[in-house]
Length: 222
Image 1 (tube, rainbow, N blue to C red):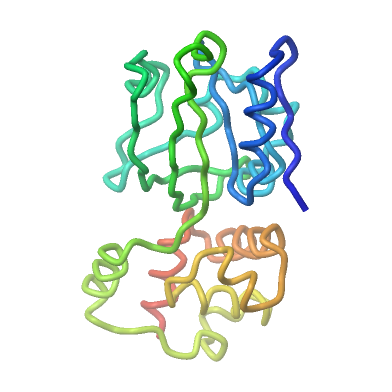
Image 2: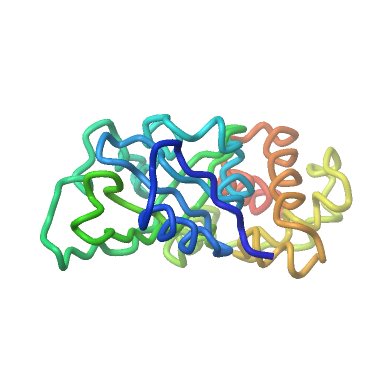
């Protein structure tokens, strides 16, 4: 089923048609106006980031996205370098970033940024297509190296993880293998939203703040 796109009132014509088409994707689609406020938001964005359209539309994009790089430095602030008007052939590369959901969960994201035709940029400056990704290989290596080279064993049998339900242990086990939310959902025959809920419960029960910390917790105890 195609994702439905909510669009800020007052936008009309060809831009509405363009945003509607771009929103019909499995990726989260977030369109940003020239004042750096969210002007379009699709169902996939709600599924991934947890904000309903009425919670996202009209808000400054940095309040919703809160992107950071792998060093923890902000790449999404009130002054956004990507928002500066460029030429008609402007291209912005895909980035891997850390973001946060509405519930506060940390997400590894891959964000592709599309620049609309120059005649539309007085209403729409950027369109982000965002998807969840697995841990970057270098991060996986770093976690393993810092934990003495130990690899995950049977997460389900570990007494330190007894606070988790069997399904939550299944999800954590797949996280330690580097699978992202979509891959876990496919392997366990669950919806992506259900997987995200399981992950949030795992973080809460283990007293950690991100998936990386949850993986590190599991690795230390295997």
